[in-house]
Length: 236
Image 1 (cartoon, one colour):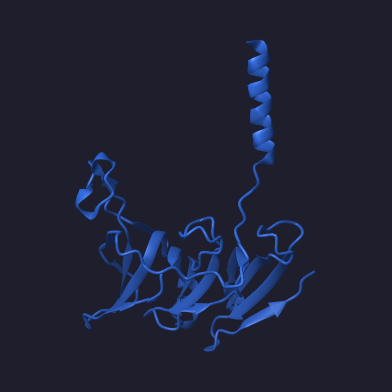
Image 2 (cartoon, one colour):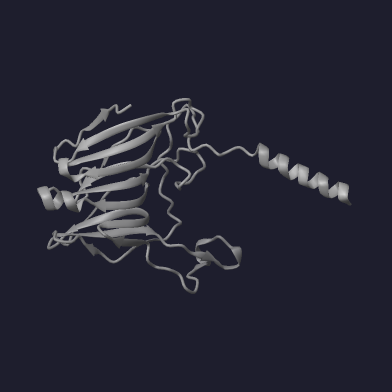
């Protein structure tokens, strides 16, 4: 019995040692897929949020988490479980956090909702640049976004590459700030000089992971420039 137990422990240790870390990028002859929208999910909106001291509302759009009856995965089998949370986002300090499919913007008085994008993406945060607005009058949002199935597993989630976007307060000029296959590490605003600084990492050795063997990139955007050009700089 002791021998059997020891053998099982050894096998478990060997299995754990040989388990490889799943890559965030899977390289094929084709670019990472922008997934088609899944029509089987239930998409809902939170109630609108008025962006303080502006004339704009934003309507967060996301998927409602549902549970199946008797493990039957057909459209007629879905039901709301007791305690289902119908809220899909939290808003605090000019930042919207959640797992969002889209955001619709509405200028007060127009009764017109304008979607941020028509692509299938995941927005994990949207931050209104309040200090920039207060200082310059410029109204911009910055977004953390997953926009491609980089690991080719058929879903958009935290195992895919996160990138950075900007837009105007009405949702127009939704612009990606980083090249493909660059993973966002961090960003910050230096309000005194109206600049957004971004650090990212590129999978230069093409092993699908991001580590010390890969290259760091540094960029900034001059936020009051209408073109919002991304400029490289080299601090090291």
